[in-house]
Image (cartoon, rainbow, N blue to C red; front, top):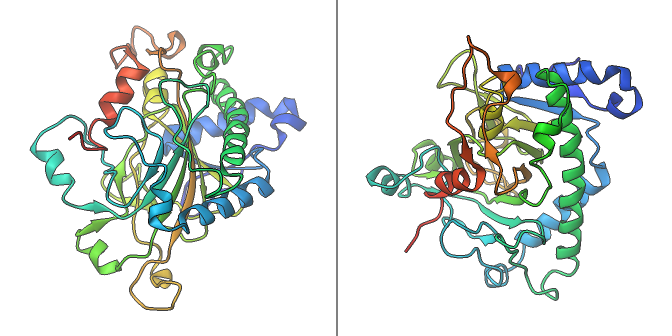
Length: 340
């Protein structure tokens, strides 16, 4: 297996289908990376390059619309339904949940990003919020198709991780993943003065852990994603873009299912490399625009997250109290959107 700079491993998923005898080795490599870093790059992952290129082109068209056009599909009030368009400053990402003065203080530093969330049309509890077809023709059909392509790939990745953590079958995990609980997120970080980010007056994406099972991330070439260094807590290492790769990370519920065998790691979007801190007009000390496509793989709403039998023993008892995914999702999401 190759290794990316600085340390996050790269795993070639291509032989998963072409060479079944290598499946265990692929599962072991994925699990080893997710145990140490909580992150891994995957090449030959199964999402066609042409589709990845197209979703980025669609994202550029979406975020290039006029503000009033994008707001024709507004994110619903509050945090219970996470769909549609979120304009800059609406969402606040953190690793804090609950309410109180700390949350109010967090919201004083605005996140400079905008996003659009798409889910399964079969998820009645999380109805999609669509732009009118004439505003962005084909957007609904293409993002829905891309959503289900990513789901198919995620099932193979979960199966590989199950092998890597020693499960006899992936069914204890796959049975909770119909695909209707997943979420496709298109993200745009507009140019911003780098000095404001350095001084903590604005943020791009503050440090946080993801809540779900795994996250599949497609990055553009801008850079800025950072992952907490497993050997130096509180320090971060760059997760630089690798062409053709998706960046996979473990979410909280997979960490819970595996009893900390796999790691949900803090990560953030900070400033890109210094030589890229300028906008498209060439003005120095501005960040370039950044686009990313995120696919959150999550359990079905009624799933109870509890330690897998094979991940516990008398010497290693369960570390977490069982909790239903919908309850956990709402608890973690309670600070992201203000309730007025």
